Figure 1 (tube, one colour):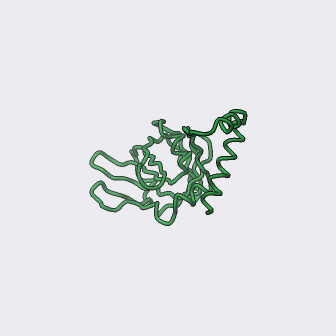
Figure 2: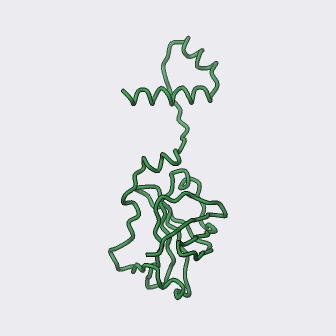
Figure 3: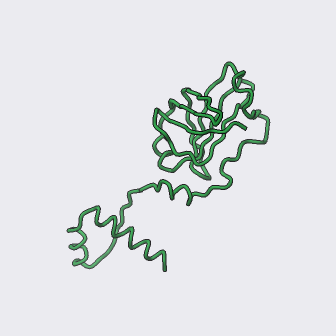
Length: 163
């Protein structure tokens, strides 16, 4: 199996937790496939982009530069499936091959959890709350800055989780 050392998307390095690169063989031809587990932040960033300029540095020193199509794989861990058609597969002879009729596909999710991914890059989501509070608390909340409230609620929730 060919190992990946680094990956750049549109010239920017990306943190990859696990990856697999292989040749997919179908009746319509060959594609180079790259499956990568990334953070939820990265999936959100590339979700609506159809094609990415990829620079893949392999462990043996080879570099693959290609424009690849993006598919977001749902369910399980956050991951991207990138692929491009291949006309000449001779330079990829040492890559694993997967046939469209095979039941085997590389399983890159094994051995990693969403908690480990979030330790590296935690997504931040906006949330709106509707509360019924005494007027004095409402007045106090309105006087606070958004950053202060964000920090306060984060600390409050972590404290509740500890109990």
